[in-house]
Amino acid sequence: MLFLLGFFLMLLNPSQQSAPVPSASATQAVQAPQSADPDLHDTHPMSEPRNPSLPSLWLVGDSTVRNGHGDGANGQWGWGDMLGAFFNTDKINVVNRAIGGRSSRTYITEGRWQTVLDAMHQGDFLLIQFGHNDSGPLDDTARARGTLPGIGDDTREIENPVMQRHETVHTYGWYMRQYVQQAKAKGVTVFVCTLIPRKIWQGDHIVRSGADSYGGWAKAIAAQEHVPVIDLNEIIARQYDALGQAAVEPLFGDPHTHTSLPGAQLNAKSAILGLKLLHPDPLAQYFSPAADAIPSVMPAEKP
Image 1 (cartoon, rainbow, N blue to C red):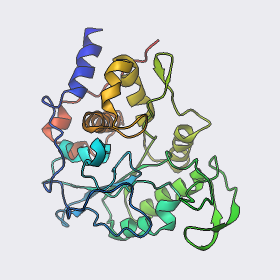
Image 2: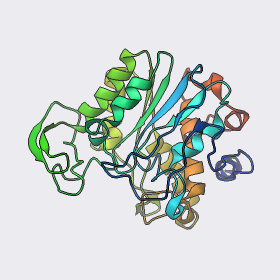
Image 3: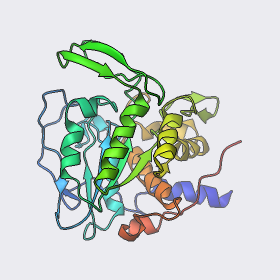
């Protein structure tokens, strides 16, 4: 019990493993004004590899990975903006290309994924996390970002009012499969992440994304495509369970989805823990001393 208490305090305490507000030491990024999730036509600058001669770790996902313009607006941060502190950026670039408001579908249909794919090189790495926005409507006039449930080949034809064109909508798994297969074809090592849990309690446990939802579907795609999975949903949920509702409350910058700075730091450390649970972990050679200090032990499950 004392070990577990020390483990959680270590993950939460930024003085023990520095996870500072991100700076140009990890990537070169142009400052952008504060805003909510970028809209369809927002051309705000995205991070680029600091040193093109080095391999790059690319992050692709939604606002839980990179919130807004990655500047802490509204007290909200994504875990991807904290991840660079745990890598030696003299050996690898950490490039957060996640965009708020996107689903596995719209990150592709808006052309965002193609820009990442074009920039990738053999020997690079990719972390993918989607699911928070995939349950939305397929063709509403505000976002039109939903995907069909599951991992099969089901489709639905729509007239997309946002993109103003006809579109064939696929399942969440179909889109996730595109990321994995296309990145692997370029010689990129891919990791599929299950989506971080929302702050939704059932008794004294955080609600998980199970086998018949996005967490389970992400795992199924990783298994089908023979790529590693980082189960952020379970790793983080176990920590929230152990901390309890009062301690988890300040880890969020909104009612249940977007994390504050301490919450994003905890989740970034959880991503490192998830990498360490892989055997082997292809990214271990690039860790910084801050990552070395994170134990490679799955948090205990609360009864």
